[in-house]
Amino acid sequence: MPDPELSDIDLFQMLRHDNVRAFEILYNKYWYDLYLLAAAKTGRSDIGQELSQQLFENLWKKRKELQISNVRNYLYAALKNLVIDHIRRHIQEEKYLVHLHNYLSGSQVHGIADLEYEELSKTVENELKKLPEKTQYIYHLSRNEMRTVAEIAQEMHLSEKTIEYHITKALSHLRTSLSRYLPYLIILEII
View 1 (tube, rainbow, N blue to C red):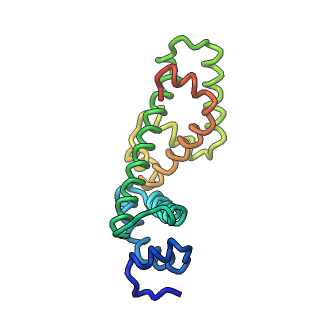
View 2: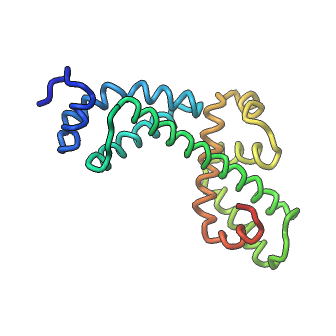
View 3: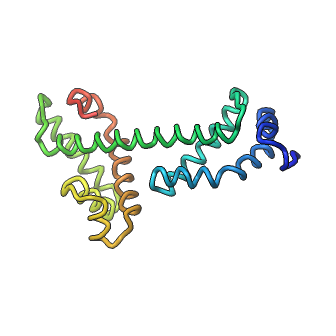
């Protein structure tokens, strides 16, 4: 069992040799601070937890390939990259759904047959019905009435984080369920 007083580099070298206890010591030493940083940068504690967990999963999976001279610097730089990737994906999701909303409202139907448009429109409608009523309503306020998260939170007497959760849940569900329409969305330059 490794001594908790070992340096980070010693612990990392032990980790490279599959020492689970060394991993636990590094995890316990850094996880909470990394979680707080990720939560602050993304504005969401659940995302902060997810990203910090992903960071340590990646560390374990890549332990034999990594060449690290400063474990702390590596962890913070790797977290920064995960946060940037998350924000980039979130922005792309938002752009995709705004364009999709415009497309479904009929304002950007360019060359796609009415039948295909109707099929896509019905699919979106059906997929939204699979979500909880509260999520559907929040999505409707956000996307159809173009209300801000703050406005929806105030109206529904919920926190902004709760509203963001419901919107993210709806967007993720739609993105997954509409993947077969990807060629149409690419042609329309929606994504």
